[in-house]
Amino acid sequence: MRGRSLLAVIVAALAALAACGVPADDSPRAIGSGRLPPDLLEPVSTTPTTDPVGGERTVLVYFLDGAVVRSVTREVASRTPEAALGALVAGVTPEDPPGLSTAIPDGLRVAQVQRIDNTLVVELSAEIGDIGAQLQQAAFAQIVYTATELSGVEGVRFRVGDRDLPVLTDAGAKTEPVGRGDFRSLRPSG
Image (spheres, rainbow, N blue to C red):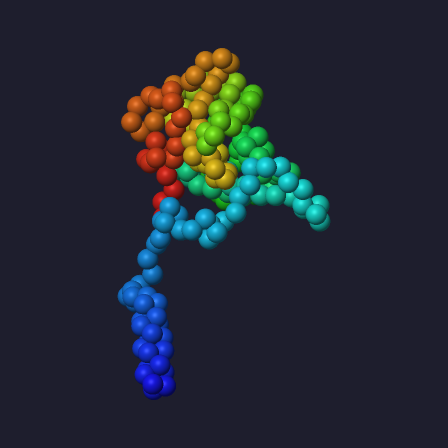
């Protein structure tokens, strides 16, 4: 009887080990962030926080690198949408990699930012209308890519004053919230 029990335990242990096997790949493969458990994604917070040692926080902001957007790191006092967008509209600095530029027009201000669920409503100053359609599309892409780096932000709706602003995307003009998928032609390579 004891021999059968021991045999049953060994068979069960071997079955459990066999079930834990992971198939081998010939080379690494990318796993989309949508398939990862939330604990494995880089934690990001849009809630203002205080660093106990007095250090600053960083955000990614997106500038133009030729015909695509490219992220650079900026230090900010807190990881809020206002701070990230403020760092973006401040523009390219001499410390940034060579060749970066911005489509954000001089004098543009982010007048107000409001979060509604997973959408940021960004009110811009009228200077956004001072640039042509192609630059305007690139400017909106820079803002969208920067905003969607923040935790829980999936889309951005734009306003000037009290009116929704039509945004030129790869698929034409939209007044509803736009996301990274609306600017695939400008997405970073790699």
